Image 1 (tube, rainbow, N blue to C red):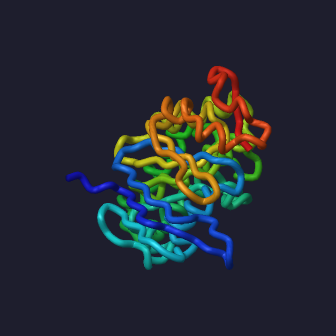
Image 2: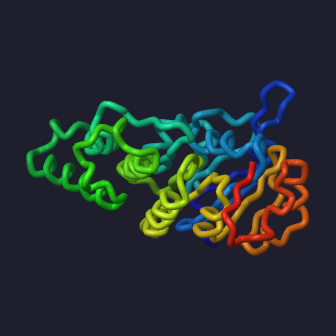
Length: 261
């Protein structure tokens, strides 16, 4: 039996009487392209923080490749291969594109100054390769603050990949992007190596359905449905979860650009 790369069992997070995440169980296999969707307040970002260790679970277990990491810290989980981009930029705005990615690599491997010259060169070559992979090779010496919003999102992916993740969590990576920028983001994520498992929280359903081979819908902190994109589109329960949000025709026109609240 194949062990899932990420396994959540009965995971909950309470803030007083409020259950932001309520008894969530979910298995995500290695190499998956998995999306989490749901109305605002459904618990998506909180669930991400429970996976990374940024917040502690109130109940349940989190396992990575069969190892219980529930009590592991966020840095420990990062060293085990969990990396995340966040809703709000965590870049160093005055540092260049190259420096931002190099700093992430240093957190993973230590400062290049502590390495032999040959390994220093290899580290810098790897950084430049990652920058090229996300389409920013022409912006290598540009401060992060001078990049467009879409370029900053691309840089955040390179920073996350510099940590050599096995599990990459992307929290609303297309937020604020133009249609053209979103299309470039989708192409970038589609080209990720198969050994990087991707889990994405995203409101732009065009991005979700272009990338995901499985979708989990959260509602009021609980799993409403996990299935293929077609199963999610066809679900009356999913449609019902969005009633009252102004998105009643949520999946009726999948060719149109669609966002959820």
